[in-house]
Length: 211
Image (tube, rainbow, N blue to C red):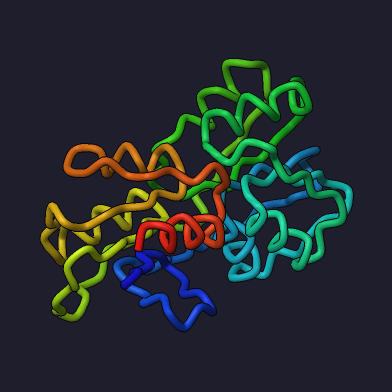
């Protein structure tokens, strides 16, 4: 059996969704017209804009990590959306530096962020402002028994933390990590496979090959 440890479920009926965390959006106000660029590392940043009724601005360029983030930005109404080739936090920041150097840029970020996107952009001459847009909180999951050889997909370091708060890891389990930061959170107790793309669909393909 494959279990998806993520804030959102998937359409695959053969995948069991484990809800271990919950997103809480921060209340804030921001004038997007004051910036040339917007940097997001999750589709939750776009949901946070929607939550606060902050409309998209077609004059601002959005730099998104991963297809889900880019799609969310486009769907919300942003006209110029750049989907990074690198879907891991630090590499993402280094990739977009040449396009952002000297520009007023807003980073919409989670309350806790493992990668150093902020530091890398600031050190490389980006005129950066940041706004905490959301936080990921651990929830109590229903108790359950897992099959021998179960495969777990982890969509964030917080979901790793949430799993360990609710369940015990066993040596017969296998893990798939959506990115390097998530993999680092897993490596203290297992050796995960890491998806090359920050994409749940890619993680599912890897997981299915482990069964």
